[in-house]
Image (cartoon, rainbow, N blue to C red; front, side, top):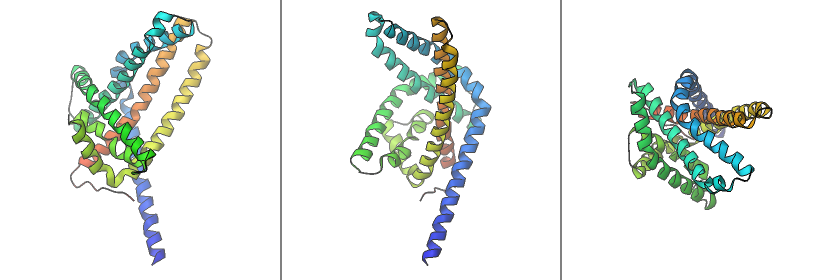
Length: 252
């Protein structure tokens, strides 16, 4: 009896890992195929802000008090740029999966409109994660996996933040560990790629003049931001899988 139960658990784990790698592979295929389109959408918007950020950093290092005083505002703008990039990636990915041809202007407008709700969502998810991690209400990372897909509901379906969080928790709770494993593996891959890009860029910028260094550092940050959008593509893939008729929820 015990051996039968252990065999069933082992089989479930093998199925779970197969589903993780399958979804990662599908997401990676989509990301590679649409990488330059996403770059064309995001780079013209985010690159100027990263140039400003790098210029601010050099100004701080050289003791420019006027620019140093504006430093917090630039950091806030950079955070908003990151949220906007995630919203734009979500809209584009959902539109491509659904075969919904949307113009660049429409995508930009939709992403901008979603930014305030996404900022509120990120704060709520962060505090929920702290509650789960610090007070052991539930495992923090498990709760994080349940709530992260809420961003897709906010952007793609324009649901209010509380409703999106509730729907995400109910929908992804049975498969939270699977989604968490996929996110961890994806994050590890992005981290490795980001480190390689950063090291390569540092070797080049070390031999460059200051203006060129600012531009190259900004391009590096833009590329790292583009690589991080793979996580958003992965979330959309799981969202799409769960909205299919007869979707099977899995978990251990």
